[in-house]
Length: 278
Image 1: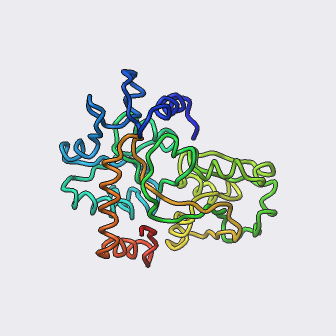
Image 2: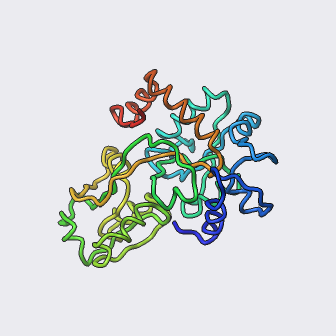
Image 3: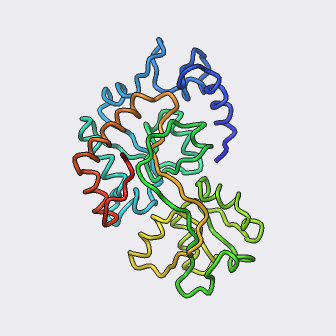
């Protein structure tokens, strides 16, 4: 996830007082500073209201958070929540497919207003994005075929494990002790990782538990190892200076939690309210 192009941007931003404010004329610095006018005022919320739409960046294969269904429609838990937020905000939701490995580039370029698609909070991401309050918990797990004799981390030694490139699963796996004893195959999406697992092209896949649970509940013959590596939070990612937009969406999510709408959407996708907003 460490991008050279973003390192320079992040360094410039973090040197400034305040969240993303910049007097520099440098294009990259201006991009990372958020949607500000000449006076340095945060116009991120007003920009969305004026445009009449919120552009949401996502990996459109990430079930059940946001993905393309059999009717070629973008659906999912995050999409339903974002649609309700947009309705209350008085704008239209527009989705935009991104390469998960370079999603921060689309965000900083202004192509999208946020990344909202099972985005895990990490220290590296917090350096280059403004993260909302977490709204859901997740765990990184190893998945194997149901007939596999792999039952523990020790059993993975000498095996091949697939992981999504640009994901926190990739970061977590690379930092884990087990990484020295396995061969890691980096792929573009979790779908590819699970397909390779199903075809016997790898021995395990390492990914989000919400994805694994969804696929298993959908009838795919996988099982999750009891030993995972890391628990994390999902949040929405914004440009570093876009605090007004982040705060407004967080406010609406709080209202949805209070009036039961968030629980209703969560129950639709997960069978109960798994959200963590206070």
